[in-house]
Image: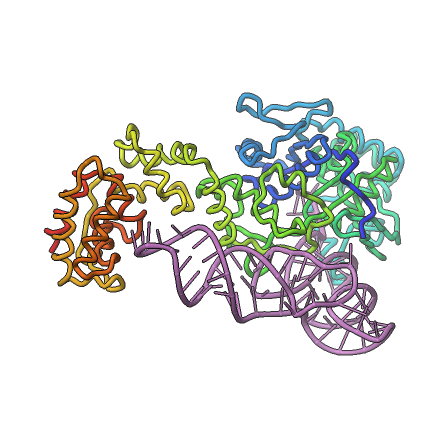
Amino acid sequence: MRIYEIHHCIVRTRFPPSPTGFLHIGGLRTALYCYLIAKQTKDSFILRIEDTDRERTVPGALENIVETLYWAGITPDEGVVLQNSMVGQHGPHGPYIQSERLEIYRKHAQILLDTHCAYYAFDTKDDLEAMRTRETAAGNPAPKYDASVRMRMKNSLTMTKEETKAKLDAGEPYVIRMKIPEGNVVRFTDDIRGNVEFKGMEIDDQILMKSDGFPTYHLANVVDDHLMQVDLVIRGEEWLSSTPKHLLLFEYFGWPAPRYAHVPLLLNQDRSKLSKRQNDVSVQDYIDRGYLPEAILNFIALLGWNPGTTQELFTMKELIEQFSLERVQKGGAVFDREKLDWFQGQWIRKIAPKEFADRIRPLVAGKYPEAENDPKFHDRAALIQERITFFSEAPEMLSYYYVDPAITKDLLANKKQKVTEELLPQILAMLETELTKIAEKDWNPAHLEKILRGATDSLGLKIGQTLWPLRAALTGLPFSPGAFEVAAALGKAKTLKRVEKAKQVK
RNA sequence: GGCCCCAUCGUCUAUCGGUUAGGACACUUGGUUCUCAUCCAGGAAAGCGGAGUUCGAUUCUCCGUGGGGCUGCCA
């Protein structure tokens, strides 16, 4: 049971990745869902960069994230955008990169300090580690910096105002922690999970400002979502248990909280959280392997969401029309490469023939320069479009147009086709004489078929027995488009030359 | 350990108390002018366990069990 009917109201959403690596496939799905909801309600999709962890920020990650989003067609209306292929920012609530908003966070942390919702803490990492060791030894299995230990640590709640001020003035490093009231019960309605209740939950005195002057996710996220007027937060399930902290922060500031929707995680085959060890996790990996954005989008949209109908293939436009949080699954979804490949095959076949040819031509020409100016390239490409799943398979599938294939006896003779080595000379001889008789103007699949069928019949053979050696002689491949098509496309001269060559194979 | 979330074919999922539990991928059988692919037709394949509510539970409740997440001066 869902409380919100989200279809008819306007919803601003945001996707806030951390530039700690290339865009993650799970992140792409979250971004897609955010984008779909915003577009569905004709509102804005914001891209914000959360680079508050300076140690984990990796160079180039930000660019990759933005470019990959554009590759997928998930284009932000506001925030970090691409302007003339360069990363830029756009919108009235900027900057949209958190490291450029430090002053804003500092100011808001001060508000919390002033209202006694937060306090300074001077404990060093060693102090904290010692505390954890001590508490664990005392039988506390999960020590926290909460009310139970807070009063024994070095912070502005245990020190006098003068002591605190002296430490601050002396430039001693400090963090700002969020003060958590005791014994609260937090309830909220998640747009995917319904009512979520944290009973008797112990929230820790979360650090809001780190000693390096950067905010943590919790502070920055809440402040930005409010300032950027985000209506709906769609994020991964790993954030579900920290939502009470965020809700409390909104309460401290006196701001209305946005709605939340926690999407289930993507899983490995063994149902653990999708990991690098077992899968390609960055979208870049899939781009490099040649997956189409349409295939990736279609596949991940359906990992955790379903339309309620038997439709499997979706364009972005259809996803925008049909997507709804109500139909998002609560449980995690295993990432199944085989199904992804099926979508890839479906989408590669949907490409217009001309575009398909234009896409594969550079690849083929890279290996066989002749293809560059081949006037018949489009016809050749058309024959393989439904035979390949990736563009990268094209060069091999078209190789025999540009180079004479290596032909082996093992390929020419084929048990399954009842082509024995003894029969081979007879078949090849027949092919040569019959093909020689055909006039250039009649050199087309239909006529070739008519002649070859007739000749095969009169030899008392089955059509497969003549066509297999022909196709093998022409392509040198165990599989390819049909013999008639290939012969027609190759032309009479080349065809005869290869049949001739096949006769020489020992 | 604590807190939280989740649970239908191998996988992604439909089902909003009554169905021969449906579809898709993968698998498999057969067909489609020769191979491969496409396409078409068919097959095998599922409600974690136990109580309860109900005339009737996959569906509602509870308890187990299992899986996952969080429990950082990471997000």
